[in-house]
Structure formats: structure tokens, C-alpha cells
Image 1 (cartoon, rainbow, N blue to C red):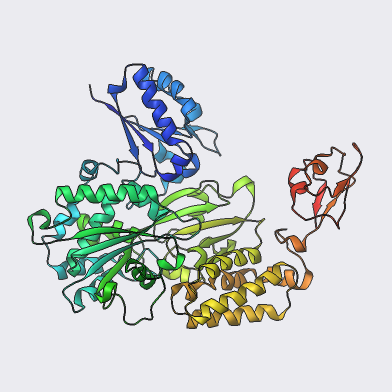
Image 2 (image 1 turned 60 degrees about the horizontal axis):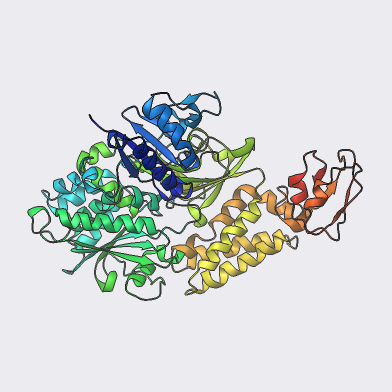
Length: 594
């Protein structure tokens, strides 16, 4: 009797929601009933739909269960695995039709995706190399090893693949520069130092399909003539590191890494370097310094790493998602690969959907898809029926795009023209309750604190900008502050040493471009329309709506609310710390924000 396969998402997101407890409960229940031998339980990588985790997919029926907890297992085993009755309450419910959906490909979150990089994530056991091989794994490497180095690089150029880690530099050109650089010793480095708030694309790929990254690096190494490589991954990703180590060991044992790979003269050894979590180490020269054991600080360029990188040797750096695209190109060919995407932005892009969005998770979409479809069709729209206000794309160095830009095609050039950037793929949605001035202050706080301090424009300029933003959000801004912010931002962009400083002003510039009126309201009217800047808001109780339930008074942390039961209450403005608890707790719309 053929075993039925039960896939459970064991990525970091689902594990944090209780996936491992549910898995153990499933094993116990199957053993208790004496039917464990009828099922193959597979712990996969991230399935993507983090909002609905823990996720179970049961084959061959392809039934998709979500939010499965350990206490749900006895019912799931009894009703479905034994008696074949679908457990409706564990299925995904469409929020519009209120219908239960059995197959995940019929869910809006998955329907518009094109999972190329993520095609194995949530589908195979990432700790089992045989499952990767069963999914055409290492076919791309085998094909590449029968090609000349120049032909491999030309194929990469034809594919149109651009770096998925930031500015979108053409991958084939980077490989070509390193191939042509003088020197026998060369290196390949994978940048897995994913530090953007809300971003988890690289982590999920390493957790769910580590062999794809290894295969991509091996192809690149063969193309440029490197025999040694490093994966630089932040130490805060223990599961990704564990699975990557297992994958490297297995690849060595099977002859896909090491000496004389697949019977050829090609040698390639791969190592892991754990980073300490400095955001600036995402910049390539700072990353290389960290691998060398130095403090992670950028170096002036030129020389570029392609000519003088790791220990002064020619070095090619790409990020996780870029390398994960590589095997596909050499399996299906550059022409077929380029059929997806736009003329100047080929292929797909993986985004981490976070913020005030219903469907948080990981989504892979074709380049050129409108932002509106990502947020509303895949992401399910804004939480709690709130109005969409803006989306931050490209991480803390990206830009904020307003509602009128929702139909913008998501590709490198369109985003840059709109004042944002693709970045690594973080996408944070904001609703009507977000203050754009405070948001700019938040992101600048992050980049300013992560500045390595080596160059004056970044070290001092971002500090001055942050001081201005803090004054504005505290109600102490002046009309000249807006001009000062713009002048400082342009100066920092033009004169900073590395990409961190050059892009740090983007959140400020983009919010000034699209939400200047909010800056002016803060300064001229002393008003924060979102109510996020506590110094610019006051809370009052409407006596006509207040029924004297005392909930606000009981929850006030400073006892600033007084009044008799069943009588209208009052807020002592001198004592009020503007925490907003009364506003949140009142069920009768009696607490007003002004």
C-alpha cells in the first residue's frame, strides 16, 4: 500500500505558531491508532502563507489545512485520515464568499503567484537531498558543466537576470567582470545578511530550498573560475544555518561540491560565515571585511570586488534569491526564463508582505505586476477594513508610495522613477492610522543607528535629519525644516561612501514627495491627522456619548480620568500622558481624538 504524504510547513513562521507541537501530536496519534506506516510525514520549508500557519497539505488529495494546532490532531486523524470526511473548520475560508477552500491554489494568495524560486519551498523536505534531486535538482549544474565558461556567462546575460538584493545590477555583467579579472584565485560569495525590518525572503529560501542556492553558487563558481565560496548569513537565522550545513554536507557526499565535481576537473568548496547582525554588512565591501575578520565597514570603490574583493582577490557577490534563480536558467534556458517579466526586468520577484495587510507572508510574482494586485489580490487588502494609505517598498532604504501609485508596475525602473526601489523585497503596507512623518522618523532611526560611522555624510547627516524629524513629530518644527530636510537628504545621497548612506534619505524624500501636506500640518497647524504623534494630539470625552461605564478610568495608567459611575467622565489634560488606552478601550465612541 502506497503511503499518503503529509506535508507540514516547518519554516520559522509556522514553527513559532506551533507547527512542531502539531507534528509531534500527529505522530503520536498515528502511532496510537497503529496506522503510522500508512503515512509519510514531511517537514518542509516555508509554504508562504504565514498568516494562516501552521499549514498542513495532505497528498494525493492536495487538501490544504491551516492554523492546525496540536489539539486539532485527534479530530483531523479520526475525521479525515481515517474516515475521509473533510474537517471544514480547518480549511481556509474565503473572506468574501465565506466558502471553505480545499485546494490552496484556489486561494487568492496563491492564485496569482508564479513560484519559480519558491517552487520547492513547502513542497520538499529541505534536509533530504534526494527530494531536491527528484525535483530536477542539480540538472542545471550538470548542463553548465558541459558548457564553456564564456557560454555560461553569455546565457546568464541573455536571461536578463538582475541582482535581487538591491539596485538590480545585471548578474551576467557581474559574472563577466569577475571572469575577466586577473588572478588565478577567485571567490564566490552569497549575501544572506538579510537585515531589513519585516523581510524574510532569503531566510525562507535557505530554510526551504538550500540546495538551490548551493547549485546556483556552484554554477557561478564554474563560470568565473572560482574554487572557493562563502555564504554570509546572519546568526539570528539558526534554522537556515542548520539546513544549509546539512545541505552542504550532503552535496559534498554526492559529488556536487568538493573536488572533481561530477567527474570533472572542477573543484568548489563552500563555507558558512555567520554574521553578527550589522545592517551595514549587507553592503558588499563591509560584508567582505567581516568575512576577513575585520570590522564590517565599507571600503571606497573602485576597486570593485570583481577586481579586488575577498583578501584582495577577484570576488563575485550575489544574494540568496539571485543564486536561487540560477539553476532554473540552466535547466530551461535563458530564452524560456525570459518569457516571464518585462523587457528590462526579467523573471519573478519574491516579496515579504507585512504591515497592515490581511495576508502576511511570502509571495513570488512576475516582474511588472501592478502593486494593486500584490496588495489586494494576493495580500487580501488592508486589515480591519481600514483605508490603504501607503506602501513602503525596498526596506528602510526604500520609498513610500501612495494610493495613486497602486497601478504602478513592479519593476526596477518604474519603482526608481517613482522614488522607491526594489531592494531585497520587503513590502510594508500602511493604513489610514499611519503618520507618514513618524514613519520616516522610524526608518531613519533604524538606518542612523545602523550607520557604521565611517563617512561624515552618513554619520552626521542622518543624525541631523533625525533631529529635525523628532522636532517635527514633537510639535516643535519650523517651516524651514522641510527645506533643510531636502537639502540634507540630497547631500547625503550624493556624498555617502556606501549604499546605506546613499539610500538612507529615501523614506524622507518619498514621504515629502507624496505626503508633504502632513509635514506642513505638523509644523503649521500643530496637527497629526493619524494621531500617532502624541505631542500633537489630545483626548477628550464626549459627554453625550459617555454612559459612565468606567472602563476608560479603570484602564488609565495614570488615573487621569475621573467621574461617577453612570455619569459622563472627564480627562485631566495636565495628567494625561496621551497613551491612547482610553481611546482603544471605549466601546461607545465617547473618547475623541483632537
